[in-house]
Length: 120
Length: 110
Image 1 (tube, each protein chain N blue to C red):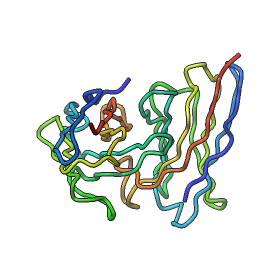
Image 2 (cartoon, chains in turn cyan, blue):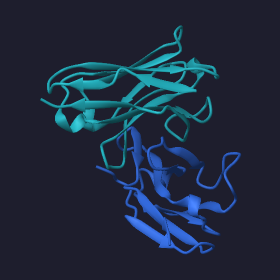
Image 3 (cartoon, rainbow over the protein chains, first blue to last red):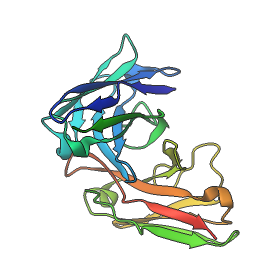
Image 4 (cartoon, rainbow over the protein chains, first blue to last red):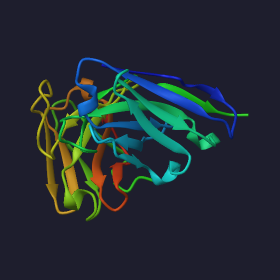
């Protein structure tokens, strides 16, 4: 199971940190990702983190503003979002890769999402 | 921003077969496997097809995936009312060291 938190209303230029608590699987062994969906729009992959080694991958649209990390002792994935813009408004989902050996292949477990609204 | 192109919508009567196309490039579909997700209204996406052809347990065999070159397809046979949803293809993209989703296709059961 995955459960996101940390969303809310934030002014443009502000910062927010999203959390995703995992349970029911060996969290540190699996690659994890953040995927967002703007209101009425499609899915957009935002960031990923490999299992074990913890290499990070960031989408060009948020590079330099967003970062991803994990705390293996708390089974928690984070998304640090800085310099937020109005077009960052979206539901943010965390998702788990299907197999421990996978990296950005197929996401078999998703959280319900947390809504981030960037508005003045 | 999507680099995988899908038709915005497809429709069919109950029991019919529909297909959804997904057009990409050599750095994504052309070089690896394709994944399909189903998203019901107000819900998180659900894994439907992985490794281009495979179905997770619990997904009916009415859903099938295929790939040729830089394009992929999802076929839904025996269309049912509960299949009304948005469907997305996806693949890893080596040119951007990331993951890309398709533009999404809404399936309507007439």
